[in-house]
Amino acid sequence: MHWDDAHARKVLREVFDAAVAAADPRVMLKDHLPELPKGRVVVIGCGKSAASMAASLEAAWPDVAMTGLVVTRYGHEVPTRRIEVMQSSHPVPDANSEIAAKRMLEVVKGLTADDLVIALISGGGSALMALPAPGLTLADKQAINRALLASGATIGEMNAVRRHLSAIKGGRLAAAAAPARLVTLAISDVPGDDPAVIASGPTVPDPTSFADAREILARYAITPTPAMEAWLTHGSETPKPGELPHASFRLITTPTVALEAAATAARAHGLTPMILGDALEGESREAGILLAGIAKSVRAHGHPLKAPALLLSGGETTVSIGKGKAGRGGRNTEFLLALAITLDGAADIWAAAGDTDGIDGTEDAAGAIVTPTTLARARAAGIDPRAVLTAHDSYSLFDATGDLIRTGPTLTNVNDIRAILIA
Picture 1 (tube, helix red, strand yellow):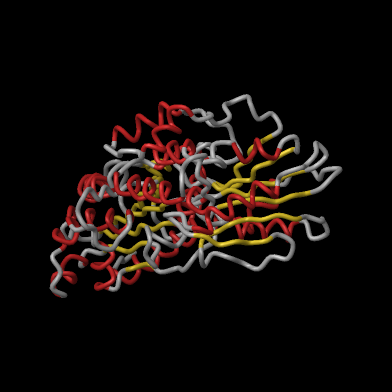
Picture 2 (cartoon, rainbow, N blue to C red):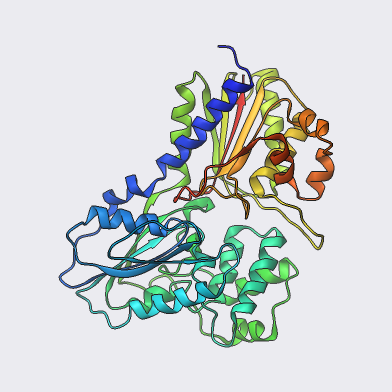
């Protein structure tokens, strides 16, 4: 089979779209519903997929009386009839994030053991539903979120801190719903599918402690305010494993499901796929350098597999901004630019990477595609790729070369999909 830019781009986009489609809650949610209760059905939820999940639940139970509230990111709403949808800000919470959290706690008050609470949880919920712990303000939480996002901390580390500065995360929402039976239906967007990390685990026990949160802040040289320091030293801990017997947790889809769908799509085009893992973390640019090296080995030596091949990986890398001013870009475009620079125009290697929610960082693209001519086209447009990488301005380069992947909000979120095609 002859591979050129047009064919490679088409296949890479089909692979990415197949991964996203496999994580669609409109397909997955109906197979994971709990038994109906004797009493009321109350629905709560947060995340980039929360509104889509709420609509899917309504469709699956068209004749069941239910009430409730979910909160999603601005622009990610879908029509619902029985479940209210709010919108708030991501990745830094806003006033609506706090209002939504307060209302969520009100929704689950006064329930009985005959009632059922269904919690629809997906990635992004940490920012979208943010209620400061006693003595803290929303400004405190916004500042710590910005500092963590710029620090290079992993999603697990960020959410450990967020849980301990919250009045609703780390199982506190589940505790407020007792004694009602609570069933969480979740879409994982985190390495390892840890329930406590997805949206900072508002409905599951928290295995970490205040000491862990303090250590993470110290590790990244983030100084808490006096109010935060006081709460992290003397506040009331989150519910721990074994303390929420009325609550259960079900994953409805995961990054692995998306990667396996991508692999199936690759085989349909005569490619041999290899899934390198669903939980890759670390600096985006370093991941780009590493995976470029593997791609070159496939092409030159047939290791770890022979071409034509597709290397697939998932997870969530990070971009450490430091103290300097950053340009435009997210972890996927930064990964791709580092990969392109390392490949340096190597023939017969193409790559795509994107966030399955359709938004890489805070930009309007899911990610981008790299071809053997990416660097040459950027330089022809007067852009220095290495300078752009140093300035964390990868979005601008791919925008100029016309290589961005724009899907709009996909209404699902199983984190990043990276695909490298070696012909």
